[in-house]
Image 1: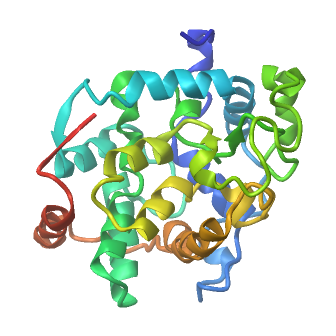
Image 2: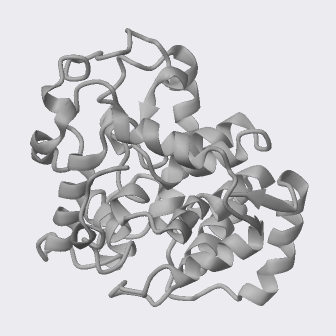
Length: 290
């Protein structure tokens, strides 16, 4: 098992702090008509808790750690839940810490889905918006926050300086491992992301849960929506193949709905639940194995 202390398991007051930090780092987007000041005050300095989160994330997300977590969780032999039950569980993970609007996690996901739906996208796209954070059920099993949320990145090769807080990778053992600390590491030029191991978290976990049920663009959105070093900075173009580049158009299309769909008016869950339950039943099994 990984060697980290109990004191290092809770660097954030709320997992929503990572999402708030994303808005601070990416306040403007061509796909939204809202002014950045409508989302939050960007003049305040970054929170120390977010920096501490990334210090731990960058220290412990090694190639061996990722392989360990893949082996540990991808057997899906821990628990069975209905999809809506898993979505409702997300509301128990954190206390609301957003200074601008008071929305729980389920309401945020409903707003994401509804924004996609309002723009006339296919129903599988709407469902993707609704469930994209469902992998946070990893917290059911006591996983530390730095192994659930956070910007994702490839492991097994050099860490790009385009990743948030790149200086914290100095404490990552892979940074001094000759197998992993070169541009390509264990990979090759244009090998394709299907052959690349990403840092562990809710993105990869949900992708593995849904990979047999959803269209490929949806799976790319789920698997890589936190891979900001690529879909915003294009820092890992040398690992992508042509198919990845085509699919990343979908990831970029999804990103504004995730970041900018919050509204002061919360959705009425009881009114929307029948629609989303029907959508879940269309694409996903009645229960999922975790």
